[in-house]
Length: 317
Ligand code: ADP
Image (cartoon, rainbow, N blue to C red):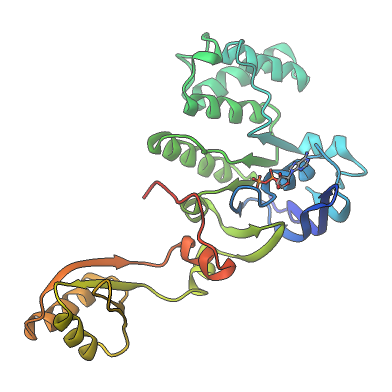
């Protein structure tokens, strides 16, 4: 099915709280059937963006189309087309998973039989059959997130907003969630996710936008963003200044740190080039204390583009 319009189109989006400018003119376009990641540190404006795009709050300025509709003029049509999970989720902790889903089926006006079928199907798909009759308060973080997402799928949304879908999850639950998200897109929906995890955006997104203090500082595919930064390198640490001197003379293009006794050398990190590098050091009898390989990641992108390291580093490799 082809859609004539992008799933999300935003131009000149602005929002201030009092004197605090939170979004300072954002432009975005997300093609249907793709995953878009809005990446940024805490306080960048990610949640505010999702709240505006999903009709929860109004923008001060800007033009927005979600699935072709304007949330300011036609909020009901937008709400019909979208699903939202995250910090303001509708999950009720005192109800069971099944009850939560049934409630959502009622809210979405599914008839009884269709509602029951949909609930059973979602419990199965999100691996919640065993926990279905237990109150959500007993669920693990990962189970809660899966239920949250299942609830948004009751209404068969075409665009899904996931606000920090894996924050606080352990690596295994995070991976499970990633797979769930990938499967959704396989089914044709569009996903707009916000994340503080560089790794997550890299793993999932077709396109990434970096948000910093309410402005987009970069936008592109993960590969495009990586190409905008210096390439990979290896860092060598020597046992004494003589080793550092000799190596620096041999690899003239490296950058050295005399205090730390280290030398950085541009290198793609492949086994073949590492072997060549080590072979040259060996031939010259230069002893290396430690070698670390650094391939560029989105953290480097952030550092290069904003001049600040990303505070919350990705914890999953
Ligand atoms: P993120 O999701 O990227 O962490 P938010 O969109 O939650 O960022 O917040 C962006 C900025 O807007 C923050 O400085 C936050 O304190 C401020 N902010 C968010 N909501 C409100 C509000 N209701 N009133 C005042 N300031 C707010």
